Length: 267
Ligand code: SAH
Image 1: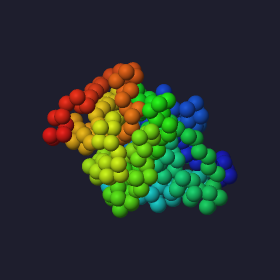
Image 2: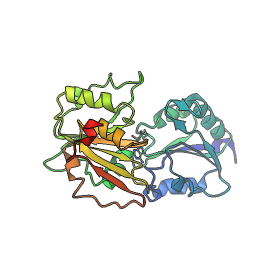
Image 3: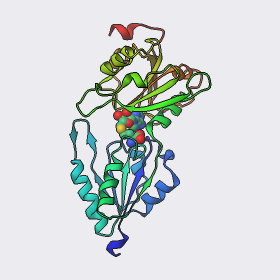
Image 4: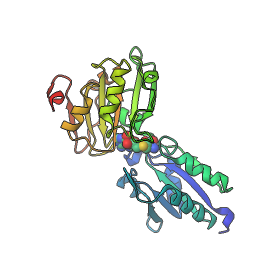
């Protein structure tokens, strides 16, 4: 193989359920020389990587990176220069809160061949598996995907007022740590406290947990139910359909609906 054959495929691994991989993603995994993967890529997806393919874990735990981003960039660049077919496997979609675009920019800057294989992002996957349509006639005419984490470490710099509309669903990635702050800002921006809200932990996986409550109760309910990352928050009237559209039966499911109780508030 010559150097010119090197290619980095930035591949979306989807939210966990291996059957949510695209056909193209699976093909790239089968053809790879090296797979460079993150913490969010599920074990079930990694089981699809053929034996003999080199696996490099560069997972990030919140707060401390296993490998700094610059080193990940350098690693991808060097392997591509070495002529390898590199799969850079990321949870969900590589271009949604995945820093895939930063890695692509580095490759582009150095003239390395790359491609992007989109994946099913947590917002669409977790909502579907939780029985929550992100839009629904009469309930939501739009949807916003936002991050609950800001560079400064708080949710302060987001323009929450612009995001708050009764007929727009809000999907918050990486919001678990700042949930108190986020909810406070949403209410301050005028969101109705009784607006239905959900947290989905380990969406699409055997251990999926779904917590349905109101936005005002969300932070306390998250503490009370000990919700852990990865978890996605969905806020909006569409969450009211979660009961009737519930269809997914994960192997180790727990489902909590705290709308009719107020213990979550007292936690
Ligand atoms: N690129 C990814 C998002 C990375 S940011 C994507 O497109 O999905 C990481 C955040 O995604 C987590 O903090 C969580 O909010 C969300 N997330 C990813 N996978 C998830 C899952 N299986 N269940 C719940 N939330 C998930």
